[in-house]
Image (cartoon, rainbow, N blue to C red; front, side, top):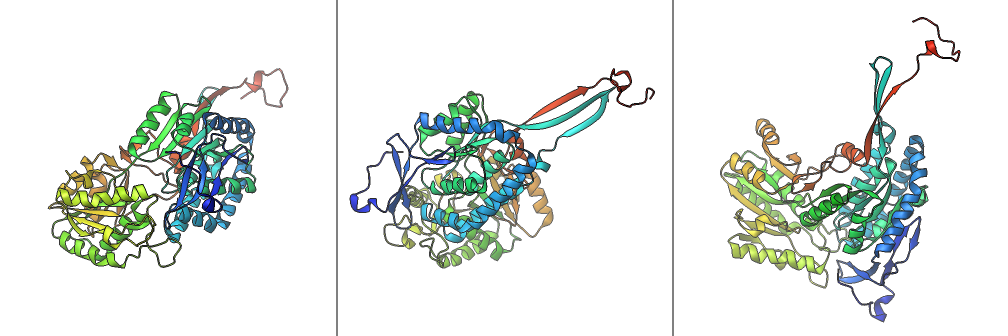
Length: 509
C-alpha cells in the first residue's frame, strides 16, 4: 500500500491510531509507515493503522512461541471452559464489533451483526474441543500390542484475512487454532483492522493467556515475514485467487502447511420450473448484500429456457426498492464499497459490459447516493456471454449478470468450465433435477433453493479449483484437522504374569 501523509491538523483529532497487539498488550508500530482507514459512507479518513516491520512480526511470533508450551499443556477441560467465556464475552460485545465493521467496511449494521453471529457459531463449535480431538484405540492389534492415535497442535500458526469479513473470517481461523492448542498471529486487512484489536482485548479479558493471540498490521512486508518465518508452522489465508496462489506457493516452499482460499465467480442456475419470485428475491439478496463484497455472493445468474424473461423482469422490479445509504441508518439495505478505488473499479465494469454487448438493465452509477461516500447503486446486466470480462472477472461489487441458455446441460457446463469452484446454487421445484445437479457440478459448496450455501459451523467451508489452494477446508472438522497433526502410538507392556513386582495378578491366564 502507498504510504500516506499525516492528516491535516484540523482533522488529526478525528483520526485514531490503530496499533499492534503483541504478548497481551497494545504495541505501537515503529516502522514509521502507516495506512489510512476510511469511513466508506462519508469518504473521510477515520484511522491510521501502523504497518509492521519484519522485526515487529518476529516479536509477535516470538510472543506466540513463548506462550505455546504452557498453552499446549493446558487441559482440554480448561480450554473448553475458557472458550465458553470467550464466546460469552464476544456475544456481549457483538454490537460493538458490528459497529466497527460498519464504520470501516461500510456494510449495513444488520449485515455486520450477521457476520459476527456466523463467526460466533464457529467459536461455539470449538467449545466442544474435547470431543473434536478424540483419537482412536485398537486393543490387541497384535499379541500384547495396542495401537492408538492422537492429534497434537502444530505450534505457532498465522492467519491472513480479507477486508470483506474482518470479524468472521478471523474467528474461522483463530478459534479452531487456539482450541486445538496452537498459538496464533493474525494479520488482518489494513482496510478495516479495528475489529481484530477489539477481539484481542476481549480474549485477554476472557482469560486467554498473553501471547496466545497476537495481531500485527501491515502490507506485503508483514505478509512475507509471516510466510517466511521459521517458527510458523501453518498459514491460513482468504483473499483473491492470485494472492492465494502466491501465499500457498510461498508458504509451502518454506515448509509450512497452508490453506489458501481464493476468489469466486458464483453462479445461480434458475430452471424453468423454479418459483420465480423466490429466485428473484434470492438473486437480489445474494447479489447485492454487503454491496456484493462477499466471496459467496451470486454474481452470475444462468437462466434456463423460458425462465429468463420473467426472472429478469422480476429482479428489475425489485431493484428500485433497494435502499442504498450509510450502513448505520436503519432503513439502509446496502452500504458503500470499502474504498473509492474499489468503487471506481467496480463501476468501470458497467461501461465495459455495455461495450462488450451486454444489456444494461439497471445502471448503479445513476442511482448512487450523492456525497463523498464510496457508493454505487445496484446494477443488472442481461445477455452476458461467457467470453465477456464481466462474466470472467471477479467483480466483487453490486453488479449482477444474467446469462441465458436453453438447457440444464448447458447451464452445468458453464459452471464446470469456470476456473472457480467456490459456491453455486440451483433453483427448481424438481427434486430429481436438484439431486442430479449436486452429483454433476464441480463446486465445493452447493445450494438447492439456497442462494448462499455457507456451511454451518460443524461442517467445513471451502471451494474447489482456483477457489482453494491446499487440501483442507476452513473451520469445522477439516479446520481442526488442519491445525493438528496425527500421531500413532504402538505400545507393548511386560506380561504381568512374568513381572518381578507382585501386582496381585494371577499367575495363570
